[in-house]
Amino acid sequence: MEGTEQMRADERQAAIVSAVNERGSISIREFAEEIGVAAVTLRVDVRELARRGLIRRVHGGATRASAPDHGAAPANSDGSSVVASGVVTARTGDATFTLGMVVPHASYYYPAVVEGAKAAADELGARLLLAVSRNTVNEERAQVAQLLRSGVDGLILTTIADPGTSQETRDWLAGIPVPVVLAERRIGLETDAVEHVATDHEHGAYLAVRHLAEQGRRRIGLVSLDTRTAPRLRQGYEAALDALGLRATSPDVGEVLQERDERAFDEACEKLAGDVREGSVDAVIIHNDSLAIPMVSRLRADGIEVPGDLAIMAYDDELASLADPPLSAVAPPRAAVGAEAVTLLVQRLADPARPRHYLMLRGELRVRLSCGSEAEVGAREPDADLVIS
Image (cartoon, rainbow, N blue to C red; front, side):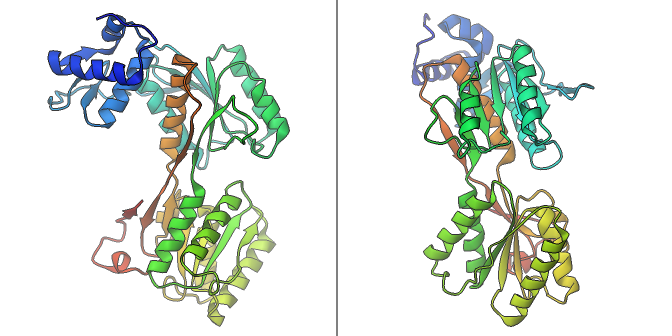
């Protein structure tokens, strides 16, 4: 079979399925040469076809969907290495592209994003270099400059400044000489040279309010750390109150707290406990886990029963399952954000003329013991999660 790099995705995928069904299996590298496309392009197609159940993806190739898996090695069977410089390198194999990734920090939220990116890079035969900006613009710019000097083909960035509101950040992004995909950031309408993959936090807040309302809660509040996520949570929270007819009964307790502000934390806990005693609040959504866990402890120390007096929903689900009681939480699809960012960047590098993509991924609700529903307090093990998406 002869082909060109201009084969449409549906044509390539039809050819893959036909060849796999006819031959039993194919090698990605050999079949890519056979039809005249890049191996990395074919890897993307194989991954998508496997996701749809049309074929089975194995290391280096694909087999029929019904074919038994005779111990085929997983895509990242040899793992990845962390070197002293702090750069993480995915298994290279016959890597076609080298991707740079810069995240704000490596201790909370982003480890799962990075793991998802590493797994996708390994699947697609790409090399992934990781840098951490330590949540400072100067370090971010220095790390990007270093990655560009290292010869990366494209970048995945979680910018410190919000490109949706910062013209300076948009100008800087537009000047980067390689393709860029933003992870957990959204590009505004003013820029069309950058793509993004982000969590739909508005929907996450909507899920939380809806679940609390389904448990009979009618006076639902929101407390959040002052992060880029907070305004989006507020939008989803208010949309849910309006849609469910809870605006009139829910007090305006949309507290936004600065991290490490102990005085503000104490005041917020005192106010919330008072509101619960007065009967004006019967549920609260708390972002994030690092705020929710100490707040729950303080409220319980003040005599507030959870979930009896107050149902609590955390947002992020990094640590919520470790709380006492284990907290129901909205879990953003962190690993999927990293994986989709890598896939999007590889697709852009393989086909520069393809339409721009802006992906919004929805999280899921993990129900535990803190909201008082029948599913939470029934005959389930205490550490079992009920997942709602």
